Length: 276
Image (cartoon, rainbow, N blue to C red):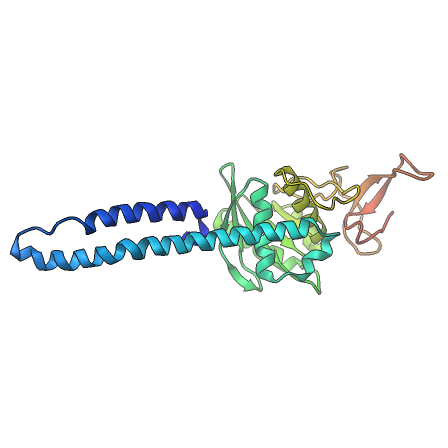
């Protein structure tokens, strides 16, 4: 329990616990013979407890500090990467920690629930501005996240009376999953969008990237909305990509003979370069 709190909370609790228990441990035993036996037993327990309880609190604080260091290390590693492929080498636990730290940098309070391992479940509970959001992480490398996962997530959101939700994957979602999520306040974050979110959140926290990407595709802050928008140029629903079936977004050509003209481009750019 203490490991889920900030490390300094554990240190503060340890100090208070020692102060209280030490005061009882050094207090003299009364002179009433009928109470001396029980008082001696209690004094022995408190004497041991004045070291045991603070020690457990400090151990929890140390574990909390270690996890915080691990999260920062994951963010630094991903932000310095050349692309979203850096996410593919992570374990499901590392991926969950990375997602939690990314949302923390965006101003959310994070509660780790642990989910149900690599297969699913609610992994994070986010709170911000009095609202509650549920997050499910999917570290799937070999196939897309289908609509069934999104339906299950919506069912949990309804049962928990959440204001919104996120499903985050290191890969991609099927077209059916994207369509279903649009009307149910579920934000779908694919690997490329997560990579960009981490870089932007890290930069806004005052730690510039060691290897900035050229001309990153802007994404909006991950507040739940009817549709995820990896490109900030338009909010209109576009056609499906002819190459990967993902939703397309309107972009503006910056160079060449068509400079200044708009066109439909795949939302998974640069992993997919489909146009219409």
